[in-house]
Amino acid sequence: MFRKDVKSLTEILGQCLRENGLETPMLQTHVLESWEQVAGSMVARYTTDKYIRNQTLFVKIANPALRADLTMMKTQLVNKLNREAGAFVIADIRFC
Image 1: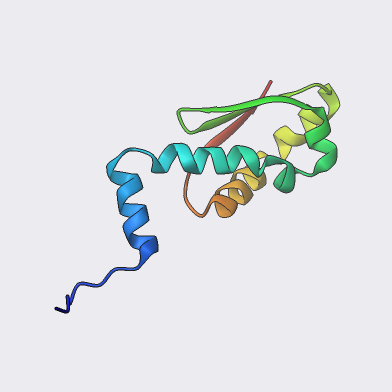
Image 2 (image 1 turned 45 degrees about the vertical axis):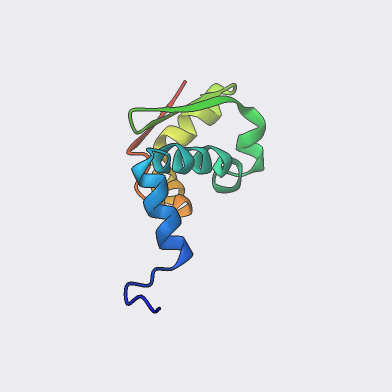
């Protein structure tokens, strides 16, 4: 018996994740894991902690000069991180 409404595994998995409230945490984890790739290894070396709360990525940077430079680049970083995740995950970055 053939079904006309055939869906790909990607569609089914995405729907299942959305229905169970797991899509957003998965995308947030992907953003956190891609920080080193997007920001660079030198920046990652000075990053001590990072977390997401209310669509804002909080990043603790140990070097004050680097923190000031990253603050000026935050729009580009937000765009790159969202592009890497493939969805709008974060709206802002705050450097502490």
